Length: 179
Image (cartoon, rainbow, N blue to C red; front, side, top):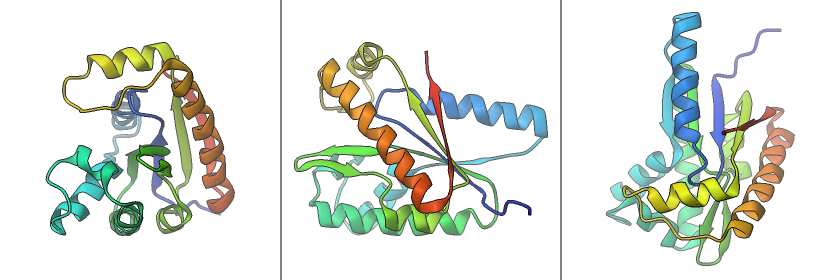
């Protein structure tokens, strides 16, 4: 039976190095298989939805939107990604959990992953101290500060969320340590 799924989700917490891992994977696919892969950032897809609705002007404002609005934007972004994946292989760069004013919002809820139907979920993890340092050194984003023990808990919760995606969709789950 051939696999018709065209989506790999690469996930992890902010500052873990997802984008670096994705860029390396895209280069390897191009080099080894002469194939292009469309990389979509789920937050950017959500931002496009929210900005078209006039809800935000900057991406970092999205996590401060009411949770119900964030959920609706997730759903619309997931559907848009699923549509794009009908034509090409896609890697989705996203967060497993998003820290909001009300606690963690699941970044890959059931209505999103059932729309996308990923082949694989890749969870990128790193040493919590290194993540804290990366966040502190990143001038391009307005990130919320987190203590090292909070980062460790966040990563553990992401493991559970990644396994949940696999349970809901039949996707395989792989953990990569970004050293």
